[in-house]
Image (cartoon, rainbow, N blue to C red):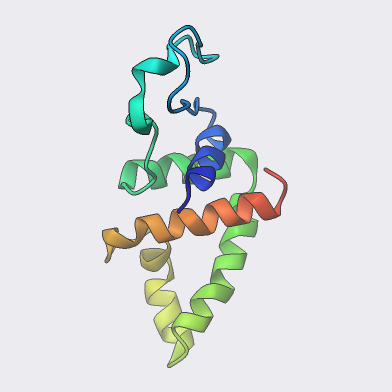
Length: 122
């Protein structure tokens, strides 16, 4: 996932993206001086369950969740082709929310960022 992807997701959920290396006199719309945030330390990384939930919640509120979920069904089908129907019913939500593999959250967030870019920001 790129910083551009993280910025898209950060702004999508209504938070401020803090710019690295900004001059000390520059402030975010949130009122925080940019120079305090060196190397993006205070920006979300989108690799935690909290990040996943924040994006999911915002997608539900904005009405983009159903469309994203439908697109993910097609990606999921390509991953799990054998005995698809039974496996899908039992595991799709676990796969999408990384319940069995939290180390894949970053990959799901990258999918969301690509989806949002493709839809013009929803």
